[in-house]
Length: 377
Image (cartoon, rainbow, N blue to C red; front, side):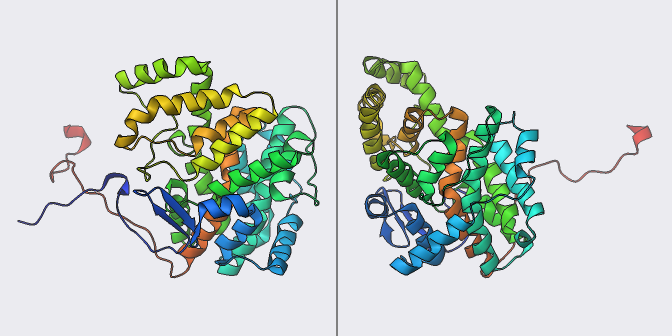
């Protein structure tokens, strides 16, 4: 009798490939990109530099960074017709509009059909600049405004805020958005990155893989935590109510949003940088109560940390977006802006020595049986 087949539901604990991009130590609560600690990158780097690092494997020289930045800025254009497509589906959820527009780009830009490492990088750089343009254009159009043209003098993060709100962000606000993008840029074989790899495994083009990734990210179990945190904060109302809220949730065996992670058993290493950002931005905008509520929840959750229920990065992200006056249905699209370089390099890695990803399912249906003609049933 053969040994029973072990089922790893959700592929949990299964290694399907090697990767030289991000290293995640869930037990220790550590994350690095290409060997560089996320803490060093979040405090000393820029999103443009991190994009270069992820895609090309090394930190750029000043000249390389300048040239790469120029490529990103040159790509801040959308083909004729994309705004028409956005208008046609302007009442849809921003993730649906973003996915539709990226899919349309595949039809409108002939170079998107090329399947090679060089083409993936070229198309990936272009999409990295176009994704925030699409999101900002949709936000303008659905509110009866004309899209704000990109500003070639601004950084990637600052230009995003400019296109979204039509006003130049403060240096502090732009830097916080930059850090947010850095922290979300790459995170191993998460659901959307794995889905993108599955698509590339079929020898599809990069745009197809990004559409797959966007579709996967749209699911609330993957990308919806920041939005849920804001709903929780609104429900709690004041810091004094946090302990009772947590106690009631735990008594009902319900999850407290923003705590726990599929990988990390200690605090998500990205969380501290968002925590500092919430505190600073809240003080800058005269709304420190948001930070105080979050910290009251953290304090109430301390007894459960030994069970791996530690704060994750999305616990703080939603409040930052709220302080900026950004609608809740844009929280997941913002996640996508930051994750673009991670998706691109995951697809490039998959393309190298590509193989069709085709796992098995263990059949547990009926035993073999005879077919009965319809008139005899």
